[in-house]
Picture (cartoon, rainbow, N blue to C red):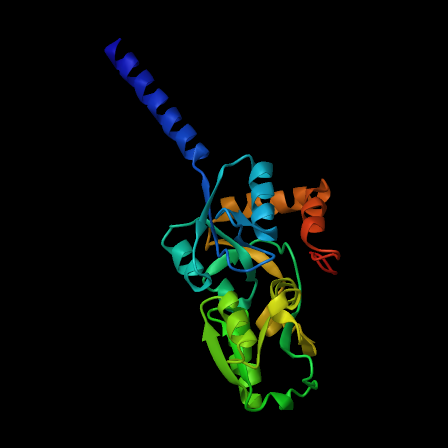
Length: 261
């Protein structure tokens, strides 16, 4: 009888542990310095497209989200050491990053653009960038692109921790311009008072070598459980209208992009 009681207690303990594991919140890493995708409201809360999409995905998966703020270049290291379970911070799906993390299907796709004074003309050859100082966010795909494509044209590439710091130095005249996601630049700089007198210049950059297959959510290598359930949730919110509802809060165009996977 004592053995049966003991076995029963052990079984209950195992079930309790399983229930606890299932209730564990999903820790999502985000950099809240990338409007309109993620930024801080006056009360200190996180707001933006990425944040709303993440919460919608967690609601669809019926799991609690815990948001963990981190500078962008520290997100993949944090994922690897299990400080976070996923990265939802406008991270482009690239072959280079795929060596370190696994990506979900994309949840949006936009080109990269250069922003400089609206009086500056930049041709497709980019020769006009000679001797120009271009700010990029350290660790981003735009950092690599600028160093490998713009620097050979004679541009000086200056890395920063955040895009907001770049905007300040562009507006102050310490930089000639910046290259980043087009939507980010439009909402975060060009539509602001600081962005008056600046405009998109030169071509749109879409080379998959640098900009990959769109923006996805990163999980640890081999974490198929989270990868599959997040992919299912992305498909679900696109099918049930929740994605469109969030999209309309921030954009007046289809940010998901054409040729969807």
